[in-house]
Figure 1 (cartoon, helix red, strand yellow):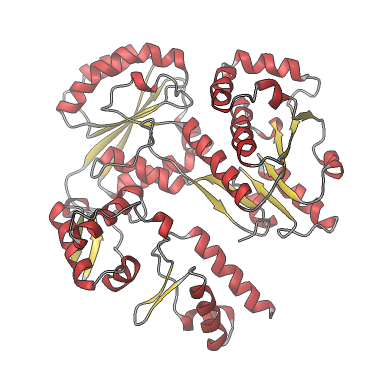
Figure 2: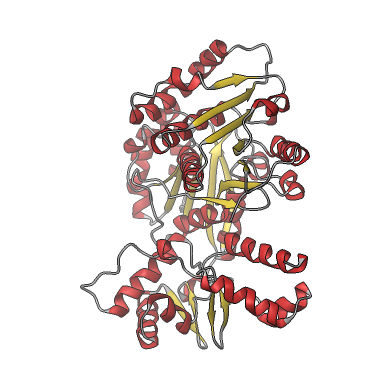
Length: 488
């Protein structure tokens, strides 16, 4: 295959992986000009992808990313008419962030093809959504959001970002792991006419005094963040006291409870809750599913504490092993661990985990996978002062998962120098998005920050009900940016 054609195919694969379903791509001519290919080559490539179900070509409209069947709502209610079923399905897409506020909905012809219904049915569904206030028609196009949600219109509303005095706002927005999600949230709030104000309090009682001292409450409040079980116990009474007051004034409130999960049921249902731990669990389960789906049973996970990952990251590793072990009976799993203190022994590490109250989280995770114990997992850990010196001892072929981008790039270069076939024989994934990955081409698995930020913003706006997990947290999902080190 010609080099240019191969590059074009790889670009299409990348677009399919990163763009949202329903996105329209450039036309044949634009692709041919950009990649300096003949029109026939572009058309035959698109047709090949279309036969595989990776693209949808609608005559007279263009080339689109299809809505995959597994992303469609589980069932369209048979008791309703077809138009009501389609309207409910589109609304689910809006709530999940597939179709977003202030963006155009797919064309009637495209959606009729995806759902297998007539165009008149789709038009009727769009009209029903307009009557419900979820979409607006401008010209011949339907847009997500009611007239009051068009950017730049309506009165200015206030969203209060409330955090503890110990937190640094600059760090939250620039260096915090979740910073991309918060930046997306602030952009969406600003686009919908919200003014962002920042307030700091020392404790829960000071928060109560702040609420009582307001002549008029803001339209939305984000409480950032309750970091521990002890802190949440101190806040519960104030949170219960606040709930009816906020509900009476129609104040939307998102509560960021950080790693805290076990006391989530004590929080009044009025608050929309966001859990960092839930996002990490979702990411690890998605990684386990990917590895199982592609048949990897030799898996090595690399953790380097000097690259900035704390104990929470190490605890997250404990979440992937039980899932893999339950799905792959011939699993060969190993953890290469480099600690910040090279003289620290594994027994000392166990004590440190216990002091950080992370052992409770480990035991809770493992309780679902008896008879796997904490000792079984620690037996898989190999401590080292130099991660690279362990590469020659690892079996050729399998999956290497790095918690940081720097070691992932170095590991990829080592494999290339040794003649490893990547990604056919060997795959490399990092759990940290960094410029180091862009140059090397290492694939990255991270939470879908853009979608999480979007859902946080609309939980605060309150224009639709955001999807929640079975435990009541905002449903987060990861995204795998496939580059050179993973198969398609």
